[in-house]
Length: 357
Image (cartoon, rainbow, N blue to C red; front, side, top):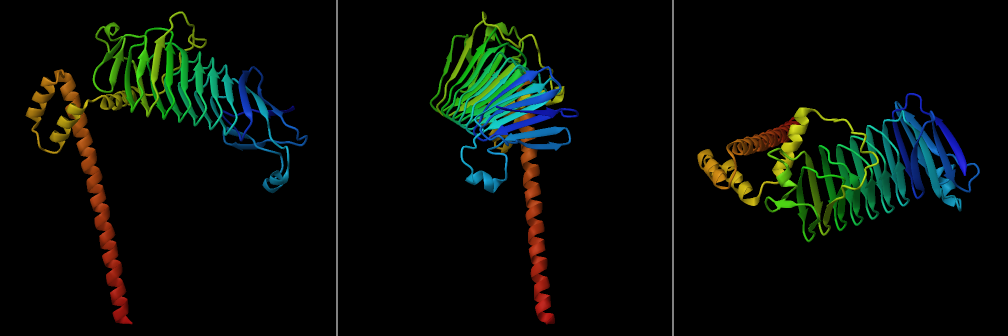
């Protein structure tokens, strides 16, 4: 085991990566980054790059040049233990075939990516969590966040001991399941899109339309849901349960909001656009294409059960989409005309040159 120490003065963002080593990343009260590397190479040196307030450390094979590494044998880095000071605000950890374990952090941003290994994050707080895996599992336990983005192909995504909070979760899998365990009753709305997957839950659930579900709807008391969950999967299930006896290790820390009121409203509109049922979408498309008048559209939406304020919101959103599409079409038309004009000019110039010659 070889130990390395790095000064973190003026460093706010830390990027860690390896090819095949398992990586364990923990917080330290020291003022240095301490990396302990399990390797047989006595002269091993990680790759270091400092750019502005960002420090990048790559635990690649061997400590020499690329060609020498190819002909070296037994030069794998098997395992790396990294201790990171509190002063680091952004943490990014990547590995190809190793496992990643992250524990005990309070950050501004946390991002982790693993290809074939497993990813585990515990007792950590950050406004933004981003976790990606191809074939390994992602397990988030005793953590708190405002925004979570999780992607997996064949692995499962576990979020355990999650305290209810105003937040957004966006999860995408191919065959993996999404398993979420709350420590209390969330005011939760979910959009669940899956070809063959299903929702398995012990919580009271209300199906609003084909893809839109509300959990603990009777507890909303007229209030809007403050927790938004979007899940897309081919064959994976959504498994959602409540364990009020559970404790969230990081629940005493509430991550700050990182987005403005305007951006939050914009995200809410985006979420709402996902839960429009097929009949509503068809009606709005007919209005957009000019096949329905606004008056008849209002009547149709009223028959579908929409409230007056909801109808106004849908019409405004539909008008905004129409204007964006028209602006894009006009821009493309202008670009095509300019291209044609340029080609014509070049052609005429060429003919003039031939005549002049």
